[in-house]
View 1 (tube, helix red, strand yellow):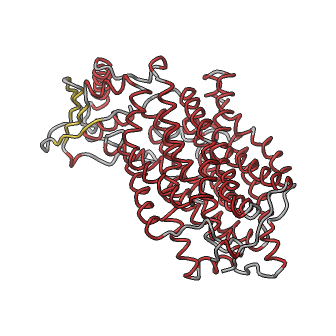
View 2 (tube, rainbow, N blue to C red):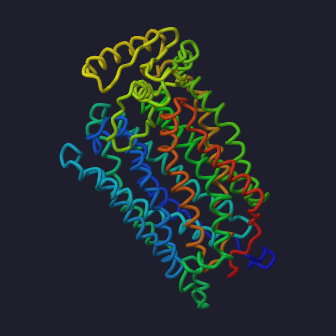
Length: 552
């Protein structure tokens, strides 16, 4: 592309342009709100729609259902990206918001497994797929639309407003959930109140449609349309020509993959870690995350603006590197401040599984069909379900697995034996007694949570998110020519965020269940972030001075 020296000069943003960008950003907030409800309410969804399987499998299945929405985002990027490059940016907005709003509302009214059986999880996943398709078309359009309105030297700052929408959408979803939850009580919320935030999307849909009706087409698109230079085949032009395809590949592995895992670790995995591993109650965990998001969100604008001065690449690469180097100490500190009793018990009475490795199975069971009957499987299943950290020690073949909690040894049993049912009751009782005696808490004590320090740690994680995410919209827009920009930037963004990021919770959960170490799931984002740092540092060029009106 040409440099900024050959670029058309831009006057300062007019009030009309600011209004259009505000409307675009606000509508995108509502889309993210709809999309993230499934993640925030995963525990209730698993109980309602996946109650036909055991609780652990149901939760993993729900995470995969949540990830299904991310899996189809690249396909939404292709469908709506093509439409946006051929017909216009504006027209995709109305289509995507209607699909998103209606599919979210359906989840709110969907009967549970007890009422309609397998139709319940099938319909839920179908709605998640529709949400993913809609979101796949939304982000690229919004980012492109805002960038093509912004002054050349302020693209990072203005597109950073779009970057806040994902976090603000998550914040709005947590706020609505918290408001409904506290107003009606845990019992009613668990029974049916969790559906209210989904149904509320009807109101947001109405507002969003009205907002999108006020938007005007992007000036850059209007220009190439008037000149007859729009692409007739955006998909083949973007991905069938090596000069464009190589940039798409670099945008994926050298930018968005690392950005995605840092984003989801700092917000979603942090929430899952608080609730599932540290056993912080849902309301407190949501408040903690919401406070961190509120404090951290302005940094999207800070880093977006900073990227206008020093470049997009150094900020994004620094965010990936710093996050990868500090995740382990930060999450260990989170345990220290959010559930000190768990940390103390783990140090005082470490848990060890002594078993023959040949009898140990992989504990990831998403559909709940596998039966873990060996003594090793029984031991690890019990500890994994409790969210407890344990080490593994090999035992001779032919011996039953044992669990050591400090100095106390608990014998397991053969799940295929005739007396397995009675032996299981004895095992559960003995393990529960040993854990209680060793000081392992069944849940985090609210009075022992160090709220200020927990918020500080969560805010640091959010600031990492703002570093990698704040400048990325401007960078992706600047990497591709106007005629195929919507299509080209949307695919790597949604593969990175939809696949590398969206599958992070389920992948990390499975790794922890397999290894026994509650922090081992962090290896997934660390490895991806470091790979992006190396590839991006070596092969991705700086883009802040690019001419976004260039056609080649």
